[in-house]
Length: 426
Image (cartoon, rainbow, N blue to C red; front, side, top):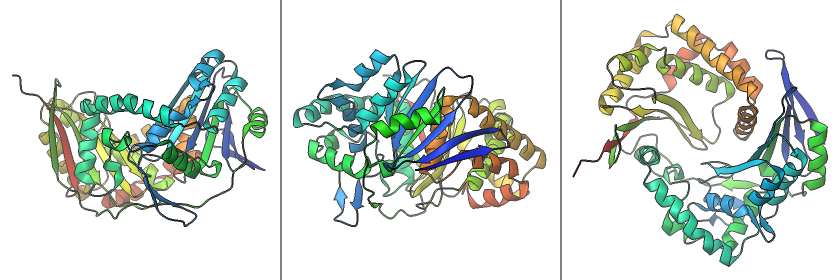
């Protein structure tokens, strides 16, 4: 068993990476003086993984929404519900399914060992029957209808449908009422056995813990698994967007918008240097101290909901600006014009230094939150990055590097605006 200490002299902190004999990659980040602990166990399996091969065998195709469905069902067992077990230890537990991963987590200030054993137990103990699977269809069907009625959810998926022709990232994480009707216990076991292999998973524990305590429990609870080659299959996706504008009406007070710039993407995600450059660049372009932000605020076109994010995963990548506005089209025009002007005039050195210091400060400050640390380490691991290397890359980013990055992203001729407009009063 290989135990490696990963240390950053820059922030004077360290954590441990353990390649466990079971196949699981384990991260332990002790935080001296902290009273709470947080653990997250994730698998590299999300809503986009609906077509795949295991060890080069026949291609398997499963219904949309099955990863999310599996997440719900995994909490159940013959002996009861995992949430009920957590209630006895006092831990706060949750789980989520995203486009490219599924994670199970808990936080606690007491009974860490008991809560940790619950996590490792139920995630490794699937229990699906025809009756319990059918029972869940009504519950998740209600959840799907709830998302369909959410303007914040629809503005995102309308945008993704406007940008992506074929990639399954445009399909709702929970699937549709029709697709989940195709889910069976057999299909859930097929997906579980394919993706919940410990070689495809990672665990991160942060806070009032130490590596020896975590390892002792893992040695007791983890079941050895045989490594398998997973080949996820995605349809070809052109660089060009589908359409440049999508609109839908909802009962909202102000229009909502998301402006997405579709980028070239591959199986490999941005490395830490590219990510650091993009983070600084976006802060320079659109943070609350940027000229663009001030212009939009002065014209009363945005409010405090305005923000941005890098949205990426296997074979998809985009940069999204979002918020509320009385005139989303004007906001989009001003953002695109400003990006083109900066590309033409070059990086302002003062704006660059302000943005770089802000992003560096935010990254270091995130190390004060055990939840932020755990989620960051897990996300970075699944995307081939390392947390301290990201902080180092931010510190080492230059204005020249940022100029090169700017010229390779934010193509203003390849973007889509998604808008939710207030419904007309009857």
